[in-house]
Length: 252
Image 1 (cartoon, rainbow, N blue to C red):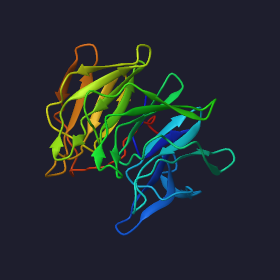
Image 2 (cartoon, rainbow, N blue to C red; image 1 turned 90 degrees about the vertical axis):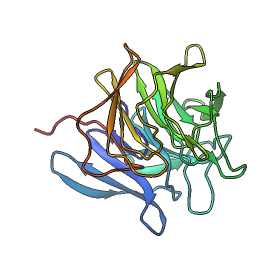
Image 3 (cartoon, rainbow, N blue to C red; image 1 turned 180 degrees about the vertical axis):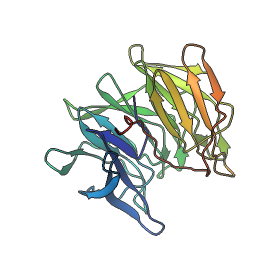
C-alpha cells in the first residue's frame, strides 16, 4: 500500500496535511479516526504548504515542497506522532510545488513539480536519505511533469500524468531504483494532472484529477503484469482535482 500527496496513514489514522482554505495556504493538519468516525486537530507544520507532497517513511510523516502563497518551496519537514512535533529536514536542491512523492526501499522521492523561479515544470527527481539527512539527485524523467501522481507497486515508483505548461499528459513512466532508470509504462485512457494515486493489492489506482479544462470523476486501475490501464465503471459523484487518496482497513 502507498498513499499519494496530501494524506498519510499512521497507526490507522488518516492525516490530511496542509492545503488551501480558499484564502490562505495553511499549516494545519487534521486527523481522521475511522473507528470513531471523527476528525480532530493535530500540531501544525512549521511552513504553510499547498500543492505539497506527503508520504510516510519509518513511521514519520514527511511534508515536502509545495507553495506558501508567495513562492514555491524547497523546504521539507517531518512529523513524529510519538512526540507530537514537526521538525525541519534538509532542503531540496530545487523549489518544487505540485510535487509528487513516494517511498521505495527506505528512500523518499520527490518527483517533478514546478519551479517558480525559472517558471518551468520539472523533469528532475531527487531522493532523501533519512539516515544522512541528505537529498540526492537521481535520473531525470523522460519529460517534464508538474502535478504528477506518484504511486509505488512492488518496489517500482510510478509517475502518473501531470502537465508541462498547457499540455496535460496521459503518459506514465516508472522508475527502478536498482538501475536508476526511467522507462515508459502504459498510457492512461485520459489525460490527468493533480490526480490522487494509490496502490492496493498489487494494482495502481488513479482517482480524479483534471484534464486542463474540467475536474474528473473517473477512476482508472493499472495492472503492472499486463501494462494496461482499465477505466473503472464506478466513478465519484463529483469531479475532484488535488484530492488526497489513501487505503485503510475497513473499520469493524
